[in-house]
Image (cartoon, rainbow, N blue to C red):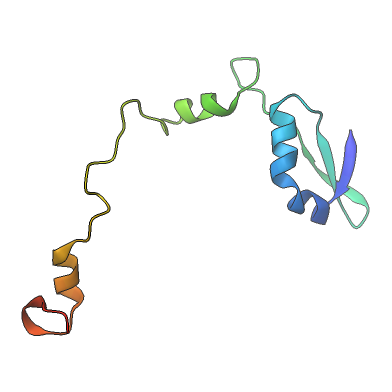
Length: 92
């Protein structure tokens, strides 16, 4: 198991997590030369490991059939009326 200081771990956290996801070994994180934490692969309570899609499904973060309504990014005239300075909502 390799050891990194806290600055190296912070700067490469995404890479470290991805390495763990694909089966890499854990990492010991040290501060001022002393080990203080360990980054290891998550083991789900049901046994086995969790991959990227499992935890999102378990937390309900992914919903099948979700789509944005058409026009969701169109300007909202009522919003501009509220924040305009002119009476009646006409922008200068």
